[in-house]
Structure formats: structure tokens, C-alpha cells
Amino acid sequence: MKKIQIINGPNLNLLGKREPAVYGSTAFETYLAELRGGYPECEISYYQSNIEGELINKIQETGFDYDGIILNAGAYTHTSIALHDAIKGVNTPVVEVHISNVHAREAFRHVSMISAACRGVILGFGLDSYRLAIESFL
Ligand code: DQA
Image (cartoon, rainbow, N blue to C red; front, side):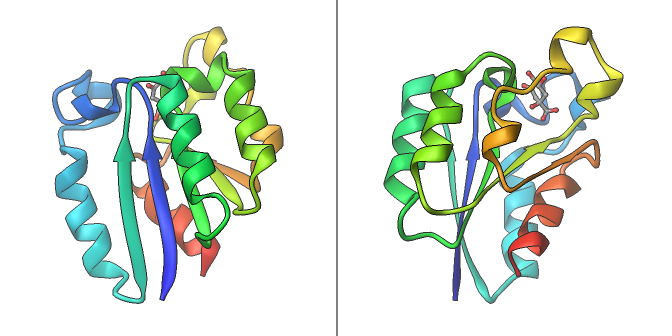
């Protein structure tokens, strides 16, 4: 059984309602049920917080015994050196994901403070970005 932790950052609790033209109209919990069904060989845990320090706490908590962390840090992607340091400080590989293609959007989304600390980056495939990240751990 592979242990995978999905961590969603700020405003991602609003998926399904928030800017549906950019992020789609599916709530994350609905998608998560599908994802879990597709990977019975994985134990997929899910955590969301709007608070930067809580995201760091979750990375530290799971970053020594999980097989993989999938992190969508939302807007903290573009600002947080503290998240970069947290990712570097743990043993579990972290894959950065984004629902939208951030490079096709505003210039401030083109920079990621966390990519260099991550094993890889998957972006622009809608919610399917999370499934592709799981595949990367298998
Ligand atoms: C996002 C992209 C970020 O720029 C934005 O702040 C988000 C969501 C994405 O999944 O496309 O909150 O991480």
C-alpha cells in the first residue's frame, strides 16, 4: 500500500465554485472519491488549509513516512520561501501540481518558489494533474 498525501493550499476549498472557467465546476471532494476508486493500491490522504504555517506543519508531519506528497500550494507557490524550505527539509518526494496552466496566465504566476525543491511539476491538466502526480509515484 503506497501512502500518498495530497495537500491543497489557499482558496482550493472553493473548487467547484471558484472561477469555474479557470478551475472547473467539480468540488475537490467529488474528484477525490473518483481518484481513490481508481487507485485501490494507494492510501490517499487529503488535507486543505488556507494558512501557510498549517501547510508547513502537514509537510513536516507526513514528510518522513509517506511515499509521496502532492502539493498544490495555490498562491503561496509564488511567494513562499518557507514552503520551499519545508519541502527541502523532509525525505518524502513532493510533486508540485496546478490545475491551470500558470504560464498562460498573469506574469506573477510564472514564478514558483517551490519548484526547485520538488521532484517535478505537473500543471495545466485540470484536476487530472493530481492523477498524473499519483502516476509519478507508482
Ligand atoms: C493554482 C494556480 C495559482 O496561481 C493560484 O493562485 C491557485 C491555483 C492552480 O491550481 O492552478 O490558487 O495553484
